[in-house]
Image 1 (cartoon, helix red, strand yellow):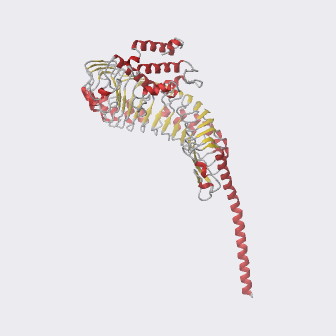
Image 2 (tube, one colour; image 1 turned 180 degrees about the vertical axis):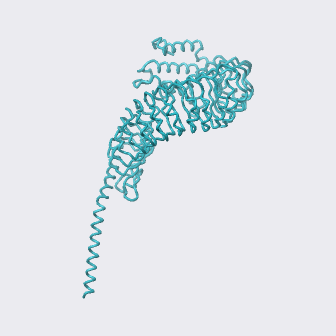
Image 3 (cartoon, one colour; image 1 turned 120 degrees about the vertical axis):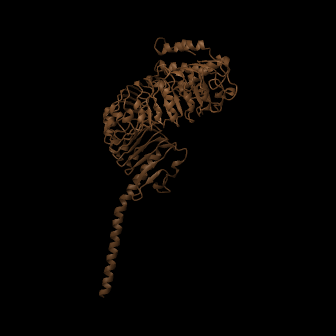
Length: 584
């Protein structure tokens, strides 16, 4: 009897335990299920804001399967909470639902390469676990939500290629101590870069190029000791770059091109930036001598200094930069029209990776060095036009693998070397405005290519070459670019744009000084809101098209070209009103 009672008692206890366990499970699972439902509903709200899904990406977002299995959705293994939303380049159109802010476990939002428009929801500030926010290459407008400052785990913010505007809220975001990458390229941000950027102590990469930022760079940027990538090109920034920035020894890429910076470069730049690999300073107002210490940055592969006011001689040990791929010194005042101006060329024979060498529009004098024949076999583009070079063209040029060669507007004499016929990759050749004489080779590149890319010299040929060069300078496109094939060449490329949108093809360096938010160009007749600069550029493009017409008889005469250029200059300087007399 006792044994029976004992067994019964144990059974009852066992049943009570099972009931307790079920109650416990029910008590725990109900909130979890509720939380999962919150995630599911937030995702469905996100889907409801999408009105075009050309690839059918969101077809799987339905009740037939758990939302953790929907395309682009990642959940945590333990709690089955949404931790990532990844829909890259799906061409989705719509707005971003504020309900995304209910995905409280979210760590990664990756939506680049779509067509989202509207504003970035303020509710993103609720995502305090968020580590990466990538909304690049969309059509988002408005300002950056200042309450992103609550997402203190953020490491990466990428909002490039949108239509965002206003000031960058760095003051509000300065508590994002873990932020490493901050990309805002190609938007419409205005105002200055605040000094509080120095509080973002973990920053490694700053990409603020192609905006409308203005003012000086703050000294506090020198506090960013981890900074390795710094790009603020094509803004309206000015002043002298603080020495503290040049002391950021971790910098690998430094780009401030197309602004209005001025001043000398530090003489010790190569010592303070020993890890530098890419340096872009073009389109500013820097002056002074070439910094000889730059050769200490032995890993430098891009040195891009065009359109400044640098002067003097180039150091003869420049070739110590053996990794150089691009050396662009164009449009400065280097050299002094003396025989030793190009002595540094000999050292460049050590640069076996050199692909582009541009020395155009300087005051280099002396003969073209014969040692240039020993430059890198990878050298594809060589520009030495608009200098004071004399003597003959070295025969050794025929041993190079060059694709584009410009020696125009110098004082070269003698014949065109027959060895140039060996340039089997040559697609563009400009020898115009020299004192070259003798016969034109009739084989190789010269037998079947147009002048400007190898055609026989003649007055119409010179005009054609000038037209192509003018189009090239304004568009920053080369006739040999990969985009030009079949029926599309640089002439047709510009001609089509004149009836569509000229601003899309013009080199930004030509536009940045006079940019106006209200400037526009409409179909057919140009409607200009913003002044003379774009009007003059369009006139120059029309001259380039007239000069590069296919039929020689359709090309402008050079005396007419000169007359139009004088008119354009007067308009650009404000000495003449741009009316009918500027029509080309």
